[in-house]
Image 1 (cartoon, rainbow, N blue to C red):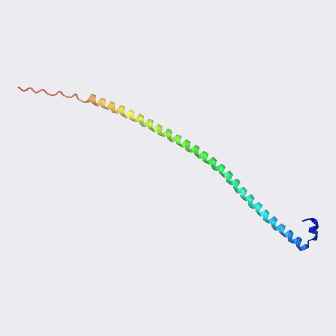
Image 2: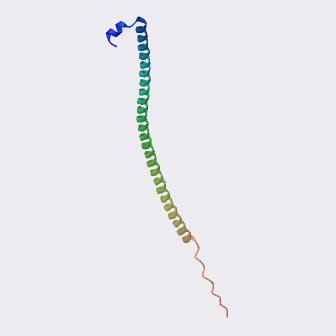
Image 3: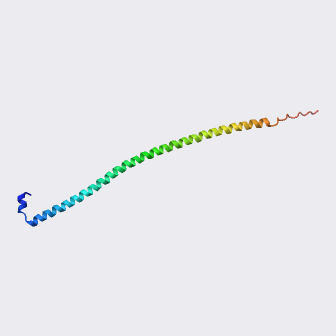
Length: 115
């Protein structure tokens, strides 16, 4: 509206226009507040997504370290078991050799002289 048109309006019409503008301003302010809260929520999700991604990377590193440690432990257990098996075999051989040495010599079968 132009200035002339505003000057020709009655007071009640001007009050009604002001009232409509106030309602519209209030609605727009509410929409702005709603959009701001949505934006904050999205920004929080984005920050959390970054945090979650970082946590996943750290967990992967933790699992890799745990797997390496477990692999090293299994390898060490295998080496120890192989060494103990060799030692037990060696001890068994020594025991067998000692037993054979200390056992009495087998007697020769007696020849029977029958005439």
